[in-house]
Image (cartoon, rainbow, N blue to C red; front, side):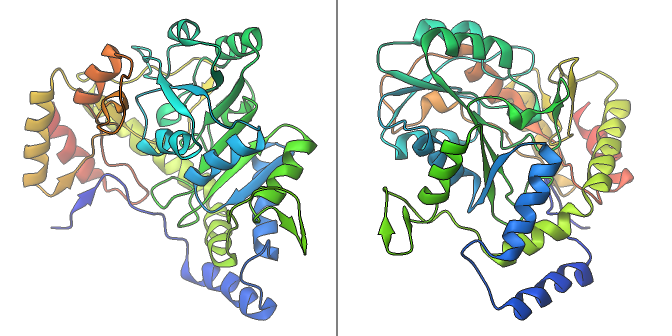
Length: 356
Protein backbone atom coordinates (compact mmCIF):
# COMPACT_ATOMS: atom_id res chain seq x y z
CA UNK A 1 0.00 0.00 0.00
CA UNK A 2 1.34 3.42 -0.99
CA UNK A 3 1.94 5.69 1.97
CA UNK A 4 -0.11 8.89 2.08
CA UNK A 5 1.69 11.89 3.51
CA UNK A 6 0.23 15.27 4.44
CA UNK A 7 1.41 16.74 1.16
CA UNK A 8 3.06 15.78 -2.10
CA UNK A 9 4.72 18.23 -4.50
CA UNK A 10 2.88 18.89 -7.74
CA UNK A 11 4.97 17.63 -10.64
CA UNK A 12 4.25 19.34 -13.97
CA UNK A 13 4.38 17.35 -17.22
CA UNK A 14 7.99 16.39 -17.83
CA UNK A 15 8.06 17.63 -21.41
CA UNK A 16 6.85 21.09 -20.34
CA UNK A 17 9.49 21.35 -17.62
CA UNK A 18 12.23 20.09 -19.92
CA UNK A 19 11.30 22.66 -22.56
CA UNK A 20 12.32 25.32 -20.05
CA UNK A 21 15.52 23.41 -19.30
CA UNK A 22 16.29 23.55 -23.03
CA UNK A 23 15.97 27.33 -22.91
CA UNK A 24 18.48 27.43 -20.05
CA UNK A 25 20.96 25.46 -22.14
CA UNK A 26 20.37 27.80 -25.06
CA UNK A 27 20.74 30.95 -22.97
CA UNK A 28 23.68 29.63 -20.93
CA UNK A 29 22.51 31.75 -18.01
CA UNK A 30 21.99 30.00 -14.68
CA UNK A 31 21.48 32.81 -12.16
CA UNK A 32 21.83 36.59 -11.59
CA UNK A 33 18.30 37.60 -12.63
CA UNK A 34 18.20 35.45 -15.74
CA UNK A 35 15.41 35.55 -18.35
CA UNK A 36 13.30 32.79 -16.76
CA UNK A 37 13.46 34.47 -13.35
CA UNK A 38 12.31 37.71 -14.98
CA UNK A 39 9.54 35.88 -16.82
CA UNK A 40 8.31 34.24 -13.62
CA UNK A 41 8.38 37.55 -11.74
CA UNK A 42 6.28 39.12 -14.48
CA UNK A 43 3.74 36.26 -14.29
CA UNK A 44 3.52 36.56 -10.51
CA UNK A 45 3.04 40.34 -10.64
CA UNK A 46 0.24 39.88 -13.15
CA UNK A 47 -1.45 37.11 -11.18
CA UNK A 48 -1.25 38.95 -7.85
CA UNK A 49 -1.85 42.38 -9.43
CA UNK A 50 1.11 43.99 -7.68
CA UNK A 51 3.74 46.39 -8.99
CA UNK A 52 6.80 45.44 -6.95
CA UNK A 53 7.71 41.79 -6.42
CA UNK A 54 11.04 40.01 -6.04
CA UNK A 55 11.46 36.27 -6.51
CA UNK A 56 14.08 35.07 -4.01
CA UNK A 57 15.76 32.00 -2.58
CA UNK A 58 13.07 30.98 -0.07
CA UNK A 59 10.30 32.30 2.14
CA UNK A 60 12.51 32.68 5.20
CA UNK A 61 15.08 34.91 3.56
CA UNK A 62 12.14 36.81 2.07
CA UNK A 63 11.12 37.82 5.60
CA UNK A 64 14.68 38.83 6.43
CA UNK A 65 14.99 40.88 3.25
CA UNK A 66 11.65 42.56 3.95
CA UNK A 67 12.91 43.67 7.37
CA UNK A 68 16.05 45.08 5.76
CA UNK A 69 14.14 46.84 2.99
CA UNK A 70 11.91 48.55 5.56
CA UNK A 71 14.99 49.56 7.61
CA UNK A 72 13.99 47.56 10.69
CA UNK A 73 17.18 46.81 12.58
CA UNK A 74 16.74 45.69 16.16
CA UNK A 75 13.83 46.36 18.47
CA UNK A 76 10.67 44.37 19.11
CA UNK A 77 8.38 42.82 16.53
CA UNK A 78 4.92 41.67 17.55
CA UNK A 79 4.03 38.36 15.95
CA UNK A 80 2.02 35.18 16.46
CA UNK A 81 3.14 32.05 18.30
CA UNK A 82 0.97 29.91 16.01
CA UNK A 83 3.09 29.63 12.89
CA UNK A 84 6.04 27.74 11.48
CA UNK A 85 9.29 28.45 13.29
CA UNK A 86 10.77 30.27 10.27
CA UNK A 87 8.69 33.35 11.13
CA UNK A 88 10.38 33.68 14.50
CA UNK A 89 13.78 32.60 13.17
CA UNK A 90 13.80 35.46 10.68
CA UNK A 91 13.03 37.96 13.44
CA UNK A 92 15.82 36.64 15.64
CA UNK A 93 18.27 36.41 12.74
CA UNK A 94 17.79 40.12 12.10
CA UNK A 95 18.66 40.93 15.75
CA UNK A 96 15.06 41.72 16.66
CA UNK A 97 13.00 40.39 19.55
CA UNK A 98 9.74 38.53 18.93
CA UNK A 99 6.85 39.55 21.18
CA UNK A 100 3.93 37.12 21.03
CA UNK A 101 0.28 38.12 20.76
CA UNK A 102 -2.21 35.30 21.22
CA UNK A 103 -4.50 34.12 18.42
CA UNK A 104 -8.16 34.30 17.47
CA UNK A 105 -10.28 31.36 18.61
CA UNK A 106 -12.08 30.94 15.28
CA UNK A 107 -9.46 31.11 12.51
CA UNK A 108 -6.21 30.99 14.55
CA UNK A 109 -4.69 34.16 13.08
CA UNK A 110 -3.21 36.80 15.39
CA UNK A 111 -5.79 38.47 17.65
CA UNK A 112 -5.63 42.23 16.99
CA UNK A 113 -7.18 42.90 20.39
CA UNK A 114 -4.02 41.47 21.96
CA UNK A 115 -1.58 43.58 19.92
CA UNK A 116 -1.95 47.10 21.26
CA UNK A 117 -1.26 46.16 24.88
CA UNK A 118 2.12 44.73 23.83
CA UNK A 119 3.35 47.88 22.08
CA UNK A 120 6.30 49.59 23.79
CA UNK A 121 8.74 52.34 22.76
CA UNK A 122 10.93 49.53 21.37
CA UNK A 123 8.25 48.12 19.06
CA UNK A 124 9.22 48.53 15.41
CA UNK A 125 6.77 46.38 13.48
CA UNK A 126 3.94 43.87 13.50
CA UNK A 127 4.48 40.55 11.68
CA UNK A 128 1.15 38.71 11.45
CA UNK A 129 0.73 35.39 9.61
CA UNK A 130 -2.18 34.49 7.36
CA UNK A 131 -2.27 31.00 8.86
CA UNK A 132 -3.38 28.21 6.48
CA UNK A 133 -4.28 30.89 3.91
CA UNK A 134 -6.99 32.43 6.13
CA UNK A 135 -6.96 36.22 6.39
CA UNK A 136 -5.79 38.14 9.42
CA UNK A 137 -7.97 41.08 10.41
CA UNK A 138 -6.02 43.35 8.07
CA UNK A 139 -8.20 46.41 8.72
CA UNK A 140 -7.77 46.38 12.50
CA UNK A 141 -4.07 45.60 12.25
CA UNK A 142 -3.54 48.48 9.82
CA UNK A 143 -5.45 50.83 12.13
CA UNK A 144 -3.20 49.88 15.06
CA UNK A 145 -0.06 50.22 12.95
CA UNK A 146 -0.99 53.69 11.72
CA UNK A 147 -1.90 54.83 15.23
CA UNK A 148 1.52 53.81 16.57
CA UNK A 149 3.59 54.47 13.42
CA UNK A 150 4.56 50.82 12.97
CA UNK A 151 5.34 48.81 9.86
CA UNK A 152 3.27 45.73 9.02
CA UNK A 153 5.03 42.80 7.37
CA UNK A 154 2.75 39.88 6.58
CA UNK A 155 4.09 36.38 6.49
CA UNK A 156 1.83 35.36 3.62
CA UNK A 157 3.57 32.04 2.98
CA UNK A 158 0.24 30.17 2.78
CA UNK A 159 -1.76 32.68 0.78
CA UNK A 160 -0.94 32.12 -2.89
CA UNK A 161 -4.31 32.16 -4.64
CA UNK A 162 -6.27 33.56 -1.67
CA UNK A 163 -8.17 36.78 -2.43
CA UNK A 164 -9.61 39.13 0.21
CA UNK A 165 -12.08 41.86 -0.77
CA UNK A 166 -11.01 41.68 -4.39
CA UNK A 167 -7.26 41.88 -3.75
CA UNK A 168 -4.64 39.17 -3.39
CA UNK A 169 -4.26 38.48 0.32
CA UNK A 170 -0.52 39.02 -0.18
CA UNK A 171 -1.24 42.62 -1.27
CA UNK A 172 -1.90 43.89 2.27
CA UNK A 173 0.63 45.47 4.62
CA UNK A 174 3.79 47.49 4.01
CA UNK A 175 5.34 44.24 2.78
CA UNK A 176 4.24 40.66 2.33
CA UNK A 177 6.29 37.55 1.81
CA UNK A 178 5.42 34.29 0.08
CA UNK A 179 6.88 30.80 0.18
CA UNK A 180 7.21 28.63 -2.90
CA UNK A 181 8.61 25.61 -1.08
CA UNK A 182 7.83 22.20 -2.58
CA UNK A 183 5.08 21.65 0.01
CA UNK A 184 3.11 24.69 -1.15
CA UNK A 185 0.27 24.55 -3.70
CA UNK A 186 2.41 26.65 -6.05
CA UNK A 187 6.09 25.83 -5.79
CA UNK A 188 9.47 26.32 -7.41
CA UNK A 189 11.12 23.47 -5.44
CA UNK A 190 12.60 26.09 -3.11
CA UNK A 191 11.72 29.73 -3.39
CA UNK A 192 9.87 32.73 -2.09
CA UNK A 193 8.88 36.27 -2.94
CA UNK A 194 8.64 39.71 -1.38
CA UNK A 195 5.99 42.27 -2.25
CA UNK A 196 6.55 45.92 -1.35
CA UNK A 197 4.58 49.08 -2.03
CA UNK A 198 6.89 51.71 -3.48
CA UNK A 199 9.80 52.26 -5.84
CA UNK A 200 12.27 53.12 -3.07
CA UNK A 201 11.75 49.78 -1.32
CA UNK A 202 11.83 48.00 -4.67
CA UNK A 203 15.20 49.61 -5.44
CA UNK A 204 16.50 48.65 -2.00
CA UNK A 205 15.55 45.00 -2.54
CA UNK A 206 17.31 44.90 -5.90
CA UNK A 207 20.50 45.79 -4.06
CA UNK A 208 20.02 43.82 -0.84
CA UNK A 209 19.32 40.49 -2.56
CA UNK A 210 22.51 40.85 -4.68
CA UNK A 211 25.07 41.52 -1.94
CA UNK A 212 24.34 45.27 -1.92
CA UNK A 213 26.31 46.23 -5.02
CA UNK A 214 25.90 46.92 -8.72
CA UNK A 215 29.00 46.10 -10.70
CA UNK A 216 31.98 47.40 -8.75
CA UNK A 217 30.01 50.02 -6.83
CA UNK A 218 28.84 49.04 -3.35
CA UNK A 219 25.83 50.81 -1.82
CA UNK A 220 24.68 48.93 1.30
CA UNK A 221 24.93 45.69 3.22
CA UNK A 222 23.40 42.84 1.25
CA UNK A 223 23.14 39.07 1.06
CA UNK A 224 22.63 36.40 -1.57
CA UNK A 225 18.89 36.14 -2.07
CA UNK A 226 19.02 35.45 -5.82
CA UNK A 227 17.19 32.59 -7.50
CA UNK A 228 18.36 30.24 -10.23
CA UNK A 229 16.95 29.66 -13.69
CA UNK A 230 16.24 26.01 -12.86
CA UNK A 231 14.01 26.97 -9.93
CA UNK A 232 12.22 29.51 -12.13
CA UNK A 233 11.75 26.81 -14.78
CA UNK A 234 9.89 24.63 -12.30
CA UNK A 235 7.82 27.64 -11.25
CA UNK A 236 6.79 28.48 -14.79
CA UNK A 237 5.91 24.85 -15.53
CA UNK A 238 3.79 24.60 -12.37
CA UNK A 239 2.20 28.02 -12.86
CA UNK A 240 0.77 26.91 -16.21
CA UNK A 241 -1.41 24.43 -14.29
CA UNK A 242 -2.42 26.68 -11.39
CA UNK A 243 -6.14 26.75 -12.24
CA UNK A 244 -6.43 22.96 -12.25
CA UNK A 245 -4.33 22.71 -9.07
CA UNK A 246 -6.65 25.09 -7.21
CA UNK A 247 -9.76 23.37 -8.61
CA UNK A 248 -8.65 19.89 -7.55
CA UNK A 249 -7.62 21.03 -4.08
CA UNK A 250 -11.04 22.65 -3.66
CA UNK A 251 -12.72 19.41 -4.73
CA UNK A 252 -10.70 17.40 -2.21
CA UNK A 253 -11.59 19.82 0.61
CA UNK A 254 -15.26 19.59 -0.31
CA UNK A 255 -15.06 15.79 -0.16
CA UNK A 256 -13.54 16.04 3.32
CA UNK A 257 -16.33 18.45 4.31
CA UNK A 258 -19.02 16.08 3.05
CA UNK A 259 -17.63 13.01 4.75
CA UNK A 260 -16.67 14.65 8.05
CA UNK A 261 -20.07 16.34 8.04
CA UNK A 262 -19.28 18.85 10.77
CA UNK A 263 -18.22 16.18 13.26
CA UNK A 264 -14.81 17.76 13.86
CA UNK A 265 -13.92 21.39 14.41
CA UNK A 266 -12.55 23.44 11.50
CA UNK A 267 -11.24 27.04 11.23
CA UNK A 268 -13.82 29.63 10.29
CA UNK A 269 -13.34 31.29 6.90
CA UNK A 270 -14.00 35.02 6.58
CA UNK A 271 -17.01 35.88 4.40
CA UNK A 272 -14.96 38.19 2.13
CA UNK A 273 -12.20 35.62 1.56
CA UNK A 274 -11.87 33.58 -1.63
CA UNK A 275 -9.92 30.70 -0.15
CA UNK A 276 -7.03 28.91 -1.88
CA UNK A 277 -7.46 25.50 -0.16
CA UNK A 278 -3.86 25.54 1.00
CA UNK A 279 -4.44 23.16 3.93
CA UNK A 280 -7.14 21.11 5.59
CA UNK A 281 -6.71 21.65 9.35
CA UNK A 282 -8.90 19.91 11.92
CA UNK A 283 -9.06 20.42 15.69
CA UNK A 284 -9.58 17.44 17.98
CA UNK A 285 -11.28 17.60 21.38
CA UNK A 286 -8.00 16.82 23.16
CA UNK A 287 -4.37 16.04 22.47
CA UNK A 288 -5.08 12.47 23.54
CA UNK A 289 -7.71 12.15 20.80
CA UNK A 290 -5.30 13.62 18.24
CA UNK A 291 -2.56 11.16 19.13
CA UNK A 292 -5.03 8.28 19.06
CA UNK A 293 -6.21 9.29 15.58
CA UNK A 294 -2.60 9.58 14.40
CA UNK A 295 -1.91 6.05 15.63
CA UNK A 296 -4.95 4.68 13.77
CA UNK A 297 -4.02 6.53 10.58
CA UNK A 298 -0.41 5.35 10.68
CA UNK A 299 -1.65 1.75 10.81
CA UNK A 300 -3.25 2.28 7.39
CA UNK A 301 -0.27 4.16 5.97
CA UNK A 302 -1.55 7.72 6.37
CA UNK A 303 0.61 10.44 7.90
CA UNK A 304 -1.04 13.76 8.79
CA UNK A 305 1.05 16.48 10.43
CA UNK A 306 0.79 18.69 13.49
CA UNK A 307 0.63 22.17 11.98
CA UNK A 308 1.61 24.09 14.14
CA UNK A 309 3.15 22.47 17.16
CA UNK A 310 4.44 23.54 19.59
CA UNK A 311 3.23 27.06 20.26
CA UNK A 312 6.37 29.09 19.56
CA UNK A 313 6.23 31.14 22.75
CA UNK A 314 7.52 27.93 24.36
CA UNK A 315 10.66 27.59 22.24
CA UNK A 316 13.56 26.55 24.49
CA UNK A 317 15.93 29.26 23.22
CA UNK A 318 13.53 32.10 24.04
CA UNK A 319 13.27 33.63 27.49
CA UNK A 320 10.50 35.49 29.30
CA UNK A 321 7.94 35.09 26.54
CA UNK A 322 4.31 36.05 26.82
CA UNK A 323 1.68 33.49 27.86
CA UNK A 324 -0.60 32.66 24.91
CA UNK A 325 -3.24 30.27 26.25
CA UNK A 326 -5.29 29.99 23.06
CA UNK A 327 -2.28 29.17 20.91
CA UNK A 328 -0.90 26.80 23.53
CA UNK A 329 -4.21 24.94 23.62
CA UNK A 330 -4.92 24.83 19.87
CA UNK A 331 -1.37 23.80 18.95
CA UNK A 332 -1.77 20.62 21.01
CA UNK A 333 -5.03 19.62 19.32
CA UNK A 334 -4.72 20.68 15.67
CA UNK A 335 -3.46 18.72 12.68
CA UNK A 336 -3.59 18.98 8.90
CA UNK A 337 -4.97 16.11 6.86
CA UNK A 338 -3.41 15.02 3.55
CA UNK A 339 -4.16 17.45 0.73
CA UNK A 340 -2.49 17.35 -2.67
CA UNK A 341 -3.27 16.93 -6.34
CA UNK A 342 -3.70 13.22 -7.01
CA UNK A 343 -5.08 12.25 -3.59
CA UNK A 344 -7.49 9.39 -4.27
CA UNK A 345 -11.15 9.44 -3.27
CA UNK A 346 -10.80 6.12 -1.43
CA UNK A 347 -7.90 7.56 0.62
CA UNK A 348 -10.10 10.46 1.68
CA UNK A 349 -12.76 7.99 2.77
CA UNK A 350 -10.24 5.90 4.69
CA UNK A 351 -8.89 8.99 6.46
CA UNK A 352 -12.34 10.25 7.43
CA UNK A 353 -13.32 6.80 8.66
CA UNK A 354 -10.46 6.83 11.16
CA UNK A 355 -10.94 10.27 12.67
CA UNK A 356 -14.72 10.50 13.22
